[in-house]
Length: 83
Image (cartoon, rainbow, N blue to C red; front, side, top):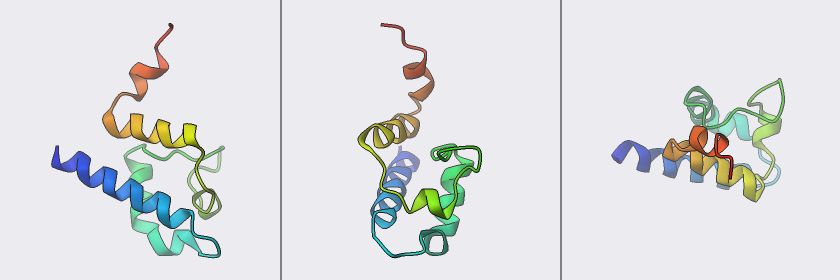
């Protein structure tokens, strides 16, 4: 449970820092972004994956919801739902 709380705090920090304009986000959070990529919390918008350009964009509501599902380990179940 403690690990999930740390991941939630980490993702909140990533989202807040990524929403600040004019910052080179990758340089500021390189290790954290790599950790989120390794844990498959962030996968990027296209084939280039998680880049500084991707991290500098503000996530939409649906992207934030998907991140929450990944943090809770429910993304696979949610994508398989047919209702």
